[in-house]
Length: 271
Image (cartoon, rainbow, N blue to C red; front, side):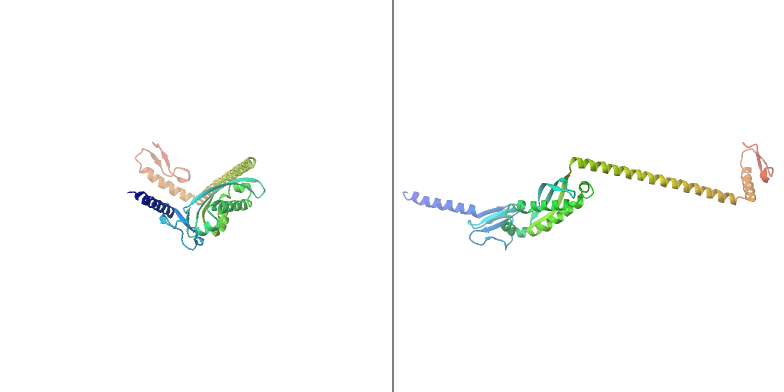
């Protein structure tokens, strides 16, 4: 019994040591994440092997695992840029991105865990200033928004592709112009809209006038052709046809044949 305390202390120490080693060796990686292994007694960051996937892993207690989110993420950036004529423009843009999974080791080794601040955001700012500097405030406010967004995306992607970052989309969320410039552009756009509406009314009125003229000319030509084709003989034949139809009618009447002008019948007592 006297030896029990002397044995218990070393056993307790061993148990504690095992627990510490296991806790230091066990790594759990959540869904949508991957781990970069750093070998303290080896060559440092492991770059020639795929990163560690989701789930439970056991590593040597003297090594370390750096965990990165590899799902699509979004970062929002607000910046001041200059237009082609030197006016100060406030631009708000967001980027959809994710680190390239198979190159996660190189990203950690060369850029570090704060790669968003070191690489992505500076590149977006540089691309935005370069692109916006090619356009006037009016183009930024109206017609060229989609083109500017695509150009910023293309220029940013060209750079970050070589920095182990996958860029999925750039969205220009807001363009804020100086109030005086914005008011001037809105007045100009309104005047242009009113001018287009006036021109439309003129074109519509012109087409309507042409339509009326064409219809009137058509009627005149038709009457002219009809007048030229009507002869006394045709009129007499039509009168005889009409007399026959009237004679067959049950209504009381008196028909005098050949007593009208040009020999046409007269209808008397029509009821």
